[in-house]
Each structure stands twice: as C-alpha cells, then as structure tokens.
Amino acid sequence: MLKRQGIDIVYRWEGNPIITIEDLSFKCSDICNAGAVKVDGEYMLLVTIQNLEGRYSIYPAKSTDGYHFEVEDEPIMSPAKEEPYKMYEELGVLDARVVPLEGVYYISYDAFGHYGYRLGLARTEDFKTIQRVGLMSEPDTKGGVLFPRRIRGKYARLERPWEGGSIWVTYSDDLEYWGSSEVVMTPRPGFWDSNRIGVATPPIETDQGWLFMYYGVRQTSAGPLFRIGAAILDLEDPSKVLGRTNVPILSPREEYERIGDVPNIVFSCGAIVEPDGEVKLYYGAANSCICMGTTKVQDIITACKESDKEF
Image 1 (tube, rainbow, N blue to C red):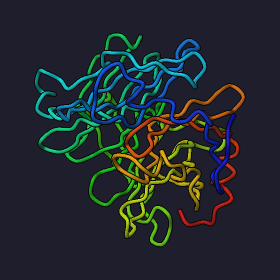
Image 2 (cartoon, helix red, strand yellow; image 1 turned 60 degrees about the vertical axis):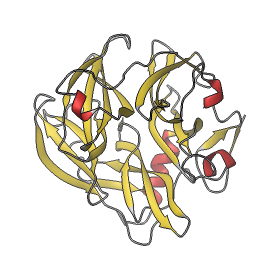
Image 3 (cartoon, rainbow, N blue to C red; image 1 turned 120 degrees about the vertical axis):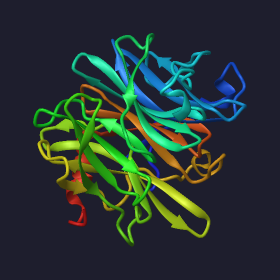
C-alpha cells in the first residue's frame, strides 16, 4: 500500500523505512542515502553506512521486488588504502549514484577526507569488481552524477560546488579531464530551495528533456529543512532549464523523516524507472534510514511544466 501526505506527488510506501540500523547484521553509527539500479530484474541499492569509527563505506542491498531489501555484510566500496585516492578518502566514500553508460555501470561518489570533498568515479560490469576511474573534480565539490549518454559528443555530469550552493554542468572527452563548466540552476530567494540546491537522482532521458530530482535546502530557526523537487533540462544543452517545480515533490512529514541523527531531511541519490513509467524513488530520511516512494514520470514532468517561470 502507498499513501500520499500533503501535496507531495511522491506516495510513500506504508512499509517505510525499508532499511534501518536494526536490519543490519553488524553495528554502525549511521545509515543514509542510496544509489539505485536495476540489473537483470534485480533491484540494487548502494547504501552509505558510517562505521563506529566514523568512516563511511558503500554497501550493496538487494531485492527481487524493490520493496524488501537485504544489506550485505561487506561493503562494495570502502576508503582506498593506496594513493592517489587514500589521502582524499580517509574519512570515507559516500552518496553513490549509479548510471549505465556505454555498456558498463559508472558509480560517482563523494570522496571525503581531511582536505574536504572531491568527486570520485568508479566503474563496474557486475557489481562484484569495482575499478576506480579517477578523482574528477576540484576540491569541495559534491553530489556529482553522469548523464547516461554523451551530449554533443562529450561526457557530461551535474555537480554542486561547495561555494554558491548551485548546480553546474561540466564536460569531458575521456572521463578523466573535465572542464567547460556552466551554471544550470541556483537557489531561489523566497522559495523552498532558497539556501542551496544539489543533484539528487541521475538524469532520466525523456522526449521532453532530461528529467532529474534535486534537493533544496531552506534555512529555518530550527535548522536546515531538506526537501526534494525536480527539473527538466534541454536534451542537447543541459545548461538550459525547461521546467522546475516551484513546490517540492517530497517533504519530510513522517516521524522517521523528521526525527533522527539529522532531523527534517529527505535526500535521494537514486530512482528506478519501471517500463510502465512508474518511478521508485529511494531516499534517506533524517540520516537514519532508507525509505521508498513512488510516482509517475509524467506526473513529475507535469509538475515541472506547471510551475511559474522562475527557474
């Protein structure tokens, strides 16, 4: 069963949360955010888990129906032990986002160390062997994700540099050297995303443009409030915004979203689009558990198109 809360167009599964600390076979400090992919009919989440020493690793969780998951005992990615990655991943690897591209799966992730954040990129064919491709950003850049195909002959990614709180697009010929960055979207004073914004899910190609979900933060007297919205970008010029929701599609309303290690947060790193257009949106709640809600691709597009032209 699914239920709708308020004006959210994402319907929460009544069995939420789908993964909590109590579901794990080992002790940890925190569980948050999950990339999502469907491989040969099996659903897989790449879940960020913080161990008792405070370091983050990425664990696979698998399901046959997209609702009931089992988290494996060993991480699929842990902080690197060899340079040049070790010094930039000493505190962890987290917030994985998965994209199928040119016959393999690419995993973009936040590399977290004593020098701040950088974007890392890895690749896999089977989610058993992971090969790091490189650290692909300047310092203090988070929330990066590849587009699932080349754009005008180049690889492209969305990202959020720490300063400015905006979403940018950056291009590459070889997935190693990146540049030609352009700003895509900025926070909007007075709106629900007035403080900062960042990429949530990988872009979904539709006949009306690149559809993706993003998180927006509004600073309140009780602290930051994280919500999820959506936007549509031009297929051949993703710096051009064609639509953007003026109200969130998912806000923290349930107790498990409002109370936890970091309260009042819904934060997504992955969504799976089913053949019938249903979207399974996987999201972290209050940095304490993983949840799931569903909606339709067309419903999100409609919400983007119906908003005022305040992109």
